[in-house]
Length: 486
Figure 1 (cartoon, rainbow, N blue to C red):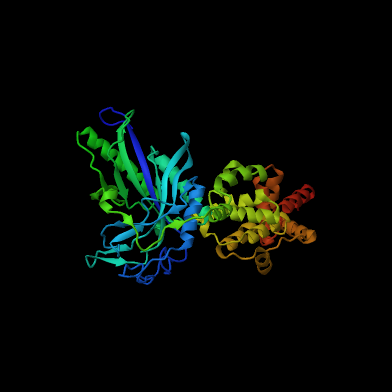
Figure 2 (cartoon, helix red, strand yellow):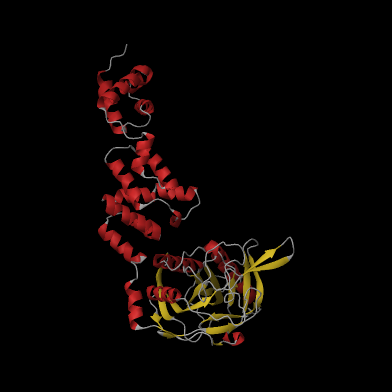
């Protein structure tokens, strides 16, 4: 990026991505991790930080952390342990957080990303397990802040990248790759709006060609990809303006205000010494046996980039379809399940690419919110392929299926939507339509093709949408060739 003084600047970015894991209970106690409970109802003496309450590690947290580490090409640290990170905030009931500093569970991985500039490898410095803090709720009416400890003790992994990212575009590609990978693993739903995936951005700028990094700041409160992009662009410009004015960038933590599109300082940036880390005395070290590690490795699902390659070889659908379908674990499950049942992968792909995408957009839904089953999607494709319903009826059935996951066969039967294949009944209706519309018949004979569309529409209306449009067209053309006007 070029500054106002003509100098070229390079942006250097590293991310700390916090991901809430999809366990039913918290990391060190049996309290529920369910989102949206009444304040302070998912708590106990352990997660509320009561004196003398002892933590017990949730085995599933370790397994999810290993699974993510393996998927991100990390080395698994088979002898790891927990440390106490000491700090005081109102939403931290113990005045320390149980985390991992000295021996995190995963180290030295990488993620491959694709941008307009090509492919790049982004290094993963480490992944560590830790507990989440509570949540402050600011009451503007009462001019006070309230604390909800439901989130306190919810298990997190923190994925710490190396400072390998150079633009907001690369950051977006990296976050999308992380989110998709973790969703495929089932380790988290990664819903940013619910806080189950959060990113802190460490950013500095330096003159292009410089070997030393500039002074970095950390940006917090980024709860959407849009916020991340805007915060990066804003902070980059702020630091360049400071440097060009002859001022210094201060190392600090800044809070992003999405409504005002600006950031403000929260506190000076701490390092490990300020947190006074020491080994947690209540938790023994974690030993991961080779057998346990291999068990997790064997349970790894097929990941998105592996699916993309297989889809191209096995299903023969367009690359764009493959990219979108594999871009969601739920869409991939629907596609594979329905294709296996009906043997029509292209037809299944068409329903997912057109009608499904339209309804998702109209209803503001994510693919993971889709309710209909692969069995019902396959059933709809079979009905259409057999000619038992026409395309118009198929869309009506799909709408009901999308809204309520109805069984398409039962719905067609109950609503009387099955295509009328009685040639005699259809011919009689076509004859009546021709007789009732002499002007359109004359227009058709005079070369006006639109008249045929009108006659088809009138026939479909008379048949209550249950005729096959192809059969209607064929019969109309046959009868109009020999029809005598009165």
